[in-house]
Image 1 (tube, helix red, strand yellow):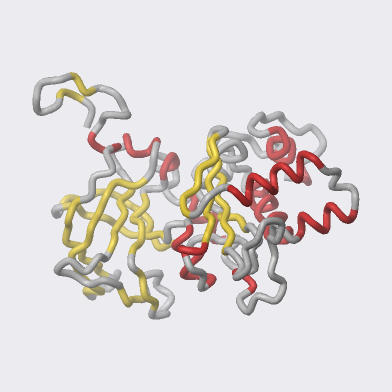
Image 2 (cartoon, one colour):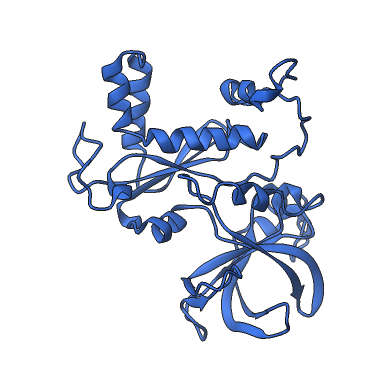
Length: 300
């Protein structure tokens, strides 16, 4: 927590607070069903999850099963649907910036698109106790990143470029930005009204996925997006050569070399700070500036 450290030095900033240090700690996790049946228990590795919400009293926690005196994979219907699945981790999420309001805004937004062609994450509400003390309502979540793409689409992380764009900074979570930079340059240098150029882009990114992703963000009126919280990935094709982005014959279509988008961090959507007349189309096109719609409410 912010304050004075063990050596008496001032420690009052967000950046130096203990909850931002990416510390991992061993813990013992027990999961009880609503009917009081003990679902599972194991030693886990845990750490604080999130960024700005790390300063809140009720924090998200990552749980990883690493096999150190515990299980290496959890085999359990953790999302309450009766389907036995294997997990090496999950997040006990406190709903981020929405923690002090509904505590389920992000989870509800994801539920709209679980059957669509974008990568969204499931959820299950739980009551959390830490060392026996009530700690509030959280949501068990799949973390929406490259490892979720690996599990859902049977991809190989070692062959993936998973990128994140936030606050004008592009970074690679896995792989590198080389292919994305080439796509960006192509878009800047070519007129996409030309059919041949548009067809070329369709071999660089999955356009259906891109369109559905934008529809989803616009529909939920996410104000924590556009100029930050963009995450997208591609699986390299077997022949990943310069100028060759797409393998139309890939046995697994999600290994065809095209970029696809990940839906995540919708805590500031669904009316978090904007009225129902906010022009979500305008926001998506202007990278982060809202106006009030006068006659386009049907577009929201």
